[in-house]
Length: 337
Image 1 (cartoon, rainbow, N blue to C red):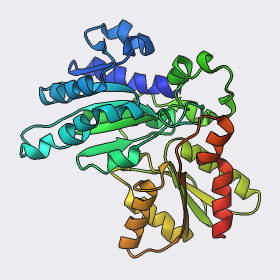
Image 2 (image 1 turned 60 degrees about the vertical axis):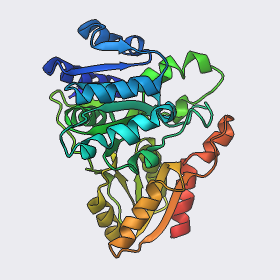
Image 3 (image 1 turned 180 degrees about the horizontal axis):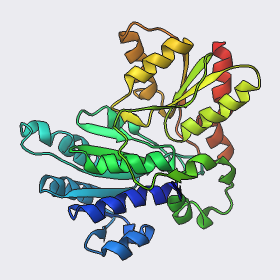
């Protein structure tokens, strides 16, 4: 095992893939600056800067993937992926079906997501619910460096389009580049989950299958289900609840689509109470999908969800209250009990 930061783990998996397969390359806004080690190792032909035109370079990724390459296209923020929405939902997601499986689109769209660092509602969304709603697109969001490396390897080797989301609060590359010195008046360091921002990574990287969750903490009284930074908020809540004699299990989904419905059903059967913690919006998102899945399977656990219900504010105190913080999770559990 090697100790790595979250961003280092992702780039290590990408570098490993680029070394093994000449078809793997990456491009996006400022990637030569953000990923200087990759540029030094593989050169500007395989680590390419692009203009600020997400629609153009994401569509270019679709074409490159159809042409036999395995591009990793990096969009600075998932919010900006809305500019290239057609490339994702009308091209990458559909061309395999439209061609009768004659074409595959082995494309990774890498984007940073999430808030907690006071950058406003147009820069702090996750949008994974909307992305996962489209057939033909897989969506993942790892919560630890080890998972970040394993899921990146899986995404690159998948014969489909995978939207790979890395939470900004875990990514030192992002926080140093855009969230650091330029935001010196905003104190968000205490909100960074240290176990997610740095941790052990296997030296020999192995794939983590899409749609395979992992149980971060066992428990019997209530199940907490989340993804990304929400997993760490759930772990913090579970530790505080344990002091009150409440045993909370924490399930890390890792993939938003495909969804590990077996693990969700198992934790629902075991605890009979669920709180789903989602940094996405309440309507049309992950929490509703999980509820519908359970009801369709004949299960009806006591159910609460902790989500984003309004536009995310700029002001740090208001932002904190809007996002799924630990206190809101604990309140939802107490309400169930």
